[in-house]
Image (tube, rainbow, N blue to C red; front, side, top):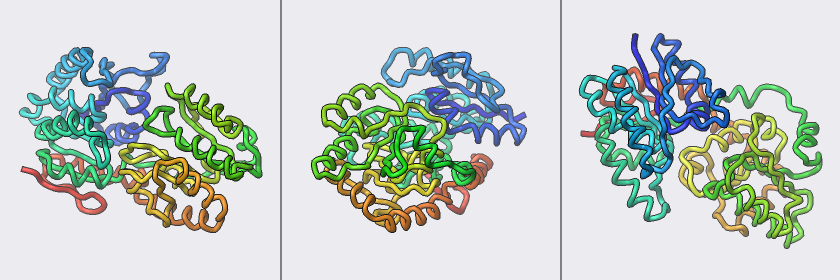
Length: 391
């Protein structure tokens, strides 16, 4: 029986969010499936991974310099050396770094190492420290990578200069479009549930409450709109949780817009909330290929987002949404423009729905299946995936 091992830093917020369809795919092909990742559930007993035959709880640390990662490396190396896996597919910076080091000996025996870069930490406009710390490490480790998969065009172009045996581009991890296009949502009832009215213009952001997601600039944009007397009937809904929640609430209060901001925490009904909102606002400083934005597009929700890698793979300015610089004034202007022009919103939402079809889960699964099957070949399959052979 063939065997595959998926490795990521954490289970709940990575394996469970992105990789269950691929574990299912391998199970249906008759493979033995395993996962190595840290159990990050509040209640460890909740860590139940579908389509996973064997689970290894590895004590990965997010910070690559933490000494705990030495223990994680030793455990992972033992698992890979003893497991005789046909494929080891690693994800997340720390998980992928340790995996590729741990799998050096196994590769000599035929194990193929796949690495999906969900967004390099070095990118156009990234802080210099990111380039100093991460770029040389990723370039060096690429020589221990049989297939390096990128999910946005900027990363793909850069990865082609690395030493991986094969470099491919895949349009993200895929989203299930049927999940967002099917089913009736009572918008009025859902709005009452989340604390907004039928006649409100509802802005929605989805993402962790951390500085990188930059909810702050949207709250500051609300203050700009208030000063221009344009905040009437505009409500801002944020889905997500994180360490920055208290700071964001204090900021909203200090700017006197707290009564227009709704913190909903972690939600399992994002598609329903998308379907009762008017505009998706996504002003992150850094993304790989944002699933939250893809899901909003799949719901027919027009978007205003930051002009960064990943977002620009999805949004063409003025066509499928609006790109805005990360200033409160420009975000406020974009929100106001969208609010005042229903025809513009509808037109952008319609084009975005067509655009997002290429990111459908079934299409991405088909392409990933071809990459897995051709792991020993020097080129990626034709079609939506591009590839390059490196020496």
